[in-house]
Image (cartoon, rainbow, N blue to C red; front, top):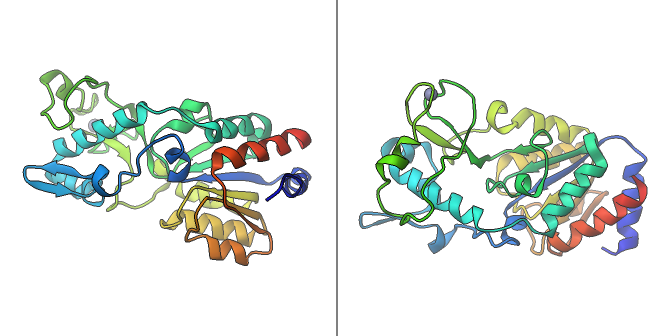
Length: 276
Ligand SMILES: [Zn+2]
């Protein structure tokens, strides 16, 4: 998509007053160097057994082996903290500054990079949770606590020290805390994951950007569908074809941009700067 086409679309969107929604997936984080945690890099070994992320990231595994699940997330949290936001993340921050209440970011990423780049908590819906937080596993409160500060030099598979272990208990009821993550055997909800809010936003959308998301999970699909029903522009930004591609291509106002988000989002930002 050339700059002229981008400016034409942005110009039309600027004349209206609906929502401008950015739905972000793993692709934008991968551009910062966050591993996909699929295959070998996502394995977790307990005894002689290798577990896949789909087995580790479950409430049933947390019930069975809570300390192994915690150690796995402590390791992932550390990996996420070792990388920095990229040009795509920073473009989204500037976009929010310009668009204000028209701006919404719906993200599948739990790495906290949007917040670290500078997007506001109010306008960022973390539909799969956020690894910067944890909460009571017994739901004694809906309060989110900061992710525990664990000794960063620990060996990732070693048992937790007494000092670190104490940080994993709810300050209110003393039951175990859990990472604030939507697990594979759990369902979307409004309280923690902004299910209804995301769907409602999409119905008021003037333009929806699908950024680096493969479209496998259910909520992103319904966000796209609601945006399409609202006659919104839908722009897929992804170097590769995704499960969204054929639907986007079928929309009259659907566009596909086969480039990384770190190069495309700054182009849209320039266009918005001219008209907003
Ligand atoms: Zn509690």
